[in-house]
Amino acid sequence: MRMGMLPAWLVVLVAAVAAERLAELVVSRRHARWAQVRGGVEHGRGHYPVMVAVHTALLVGILAEVAVARRAFIPVLGWSALCAVVLLQGLRWWCVWSLGPRWNTRVIVVPGLPLVRRGPYRWLRHPNYVVVAAEGVALPLVHSAWLTALLFTAANAAVLTVRLRVENAALGLSA
Image: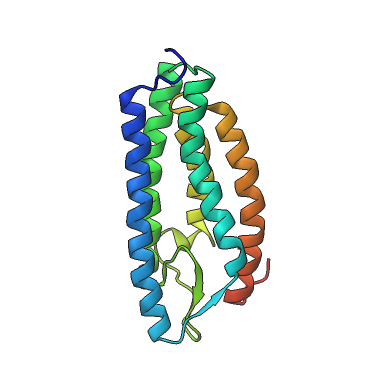
C-alpha cells in the first residue's frame, strides 16, 4: 500500500462508526430536551469539547496512521478486533437502551430520579465508558493502527478522569 492509499473497506468502517456517532448525537439531543423539560441540569460543560475532539481524533488517527505509516492488515488481529468492535457496538446500544431518555453524551441529571439499575448498570456504575475504552483499542487495531490506540487510550483516560469526577458528583456518588 502506497502512502495515501487506504483500503476502501477501512474507510467504509470508519465512516460507519462516524455515522453511528452522529446517530448518538441525534438521540442525545432528543434526550437532552426530555431532561430539560423535567428540570435537568447540565454539569461539566467545559470538558465536553475536549471529549468530542478526542473521539474525532480517534477516527481521523486511524486513517492517517494506516496511510502514513503503511500499517498492514494482520488477519488474526484485524478479524479479532473487528469482532470486538461489532460486539462493543451492541454493548454500547444496550447501555443507551438501559438508561432510556436519561442517556446522553453530556452530563445532564434530572433531580429526584433514582439511579438506573437495569441492563449492564446492574453490575457496573459506568459500563458505557468501559465500552468506549475497549473500542478505542479495538477499532484502531482492526488495521494495526497501534499508535492511534495508544494515543487515544491516554487521551481518553485523561478526559474520563474529569468526566467521571463530574458525573459522580452530579449523581451524588462517591468516587
